[in-house]
Image (cartoon, rainbow, N blue to C red; front, side, top):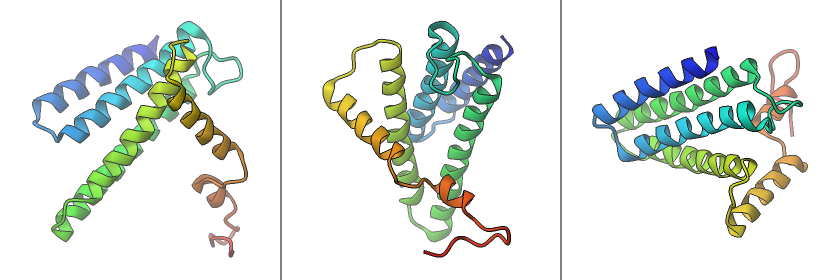
Length: 158
């Protein structure tokens, strides 16, 4: 219950700040997708008990907090991109990050919809299947590569 109340509180505050502060439309969309994805993930775990994040499919406070941390980290990257844009006198780094995160969050929302039993268009389902196959094949993620870092803190040579 604590996670649900905390999540709803954060969503309400973020909504008020976002729509009251005159933010960029891309950032508004990203925040809306992030909130939607997180709330849908909670719903899948609580009501459907089909969360892919846990073996039982049930809600895990540790996984829920990890999801919030991930979203906060994404927003930190957007902030750093905006600061970089300001420093360089350009306006493309933050926008590129926002667009890439929008795509990622949109796909996650669609994936959540499929877990809830909502029909997903075949084209989108094929795209999700391709991404999941790629994720589960031999392609290394950034995390996997960083796990291979040796004890001295040096990245592995290729």
